Length: 501
Figure 1 (spheres, one colour):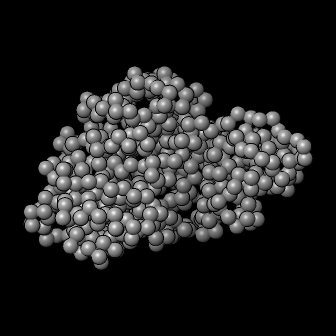
Figure 2: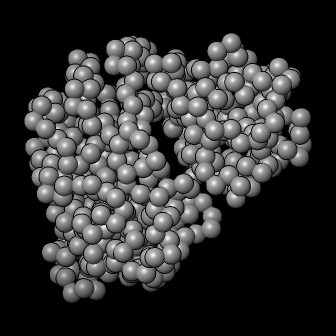
């Protein structure tokens, strides 16, 4: 038997598991006895188990997240049946809380909660030395970041050439938004700037051009933000793409000046608004200056070269359909490139759980534990928003319909798009697997059913159809006529969407 296999199931093949690389980089003398194995959701659990056992490991450590816990549980169950001699360790956010309630924790030999950089290597060393600890659940020790080996040498040349490279300039978050596990952090801890930038340079020199920062608060410390932006400004290239998550109400002039020096398409900013409602914000301990956030989003969209992806969360305690709709309209008026409509999830350990009884929050019992109903939104309301979100991705976020979308939304974006969502579901019963021709037909038929001029609708939909590079003829196009070809509108933003799975 060999040593240690580190494994996880990613949402997509282009994703890479930063957590596994952090663990391997910190294994010390055991690093050479370890390997990383990454799989993708949809892979058969039995096939995963077979491939893991082909390494003949003594220890398998799994990174467990809300999106992969169910499939990972099936893999662990198979391993414990066919290879009980292999020690299984699970860790990650999903198994760091409520461990007694989880089947995967019962199946595993050990559970590491919280940070694993120090605790996981020690546990492996003890097991391999024949001195396994008596306790099953081990609380991860949080060391100073200076004591942690950086993980970036663990990215392979194939990772760099073909996949997203995730990096972190800091860990933790000082804010207390109750829907997020980061609310449990006391603060944010930065990695040493010189050491981090040297690691970035090494990645860049090896050919990395797609960097995704996982920091919850990239623009918390402006001096550090500026140093990172300057790093990339000195290395601009046609294929450079950098993703950051920004605090919406903190965008001082120095940061704006640096952002303006980038060419279009390089910077991709994810901004969490989540809710505009001040009462809901206070209820979930979210501090946000809405006026400043609105002004910053307007500046980013109208004056900066950045691609802008903004999040809203439906189902927060006390927020009803009307209030959420007003928030969507307020955000849409700022014209971000994408609006992600998310549905609240009850992350294990997150403080949002304190509202469960007072606001009649009812969550799915299965991952990802999406809210099903609240005292302000019944099950039917939530289902309508879920469908709204899916169709919005197809129509609003896709970039395919720059001419049709204004006709569809008019002066009441949320209300009118919800009407479309209700109509298309009633007429198709589907939320997925829409061919572009079918989607165009639905848009055409719905708008005509609303009394709009048929020729205007047909021209807009047909121009959007061909503007995205599609070929063929839509059923409603007049025989012998074709719209003028229009330029595609999606560009680098479509590339960025694949990381929001």
